Length: 257
Image (cartoon, rainbow, N blue to C red; front, side):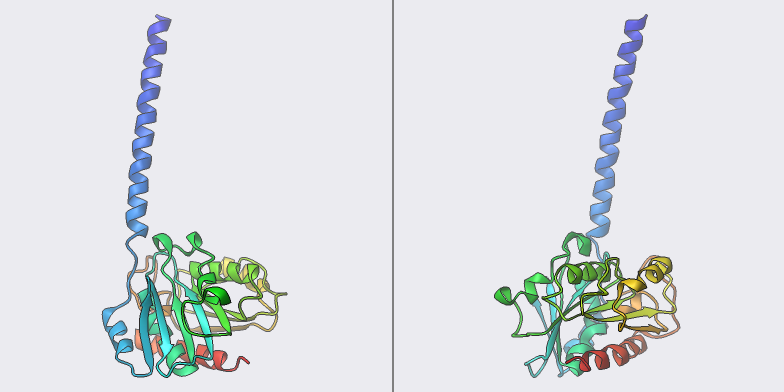
């Protein structure tokens, strides 16, 4: 009878809704666990930086702060981590900026380890009325992978707060070519994670005088972590990769006014 068919359809529809809700809850739980379990920096690399007399490593909440041991940094850099990467994964790769370029580096912790959820994080450090670290007047914003994309968006929206952008294995999906900002973009020739098409298409978004460099690094070696899905070995050790990176970034920062 038609009434029985309608009842059966309603029952099946209710079961389908329950199944879809349950599947959604499971998918959300899996995503929360996945993104809430970040890739961490190697303990040996972090320990080596902490033992370096030229660098002071502290934490401000969940952010990592690297400062020149003598204090009085010439500039500051707020560095956004890559997607699902913990701030401590950049202690080893960014330490030379504090030790050799006299730059205070702040690596904030992102909600669910995704910079896209806190693109305004740099404002906690570069806004003069809300300084949390040091007395730095010149600030840069930068990041790795997804973090670099979000750093560019911050710079595009706040060109008066920062003096430049530092990108590791990343690109600007917003046009900063007319902002007057300095820009450094470093990519890895062994990087099998970076979206090369998006990178090439976004080059025009950088200032005409931007510095671009390619080094024999893979994606993970812009930090000090392992386990990046899709990444391949570069043939360089992490220590050698970080030295090569410092050879580019330290002089670039040192040449800024």
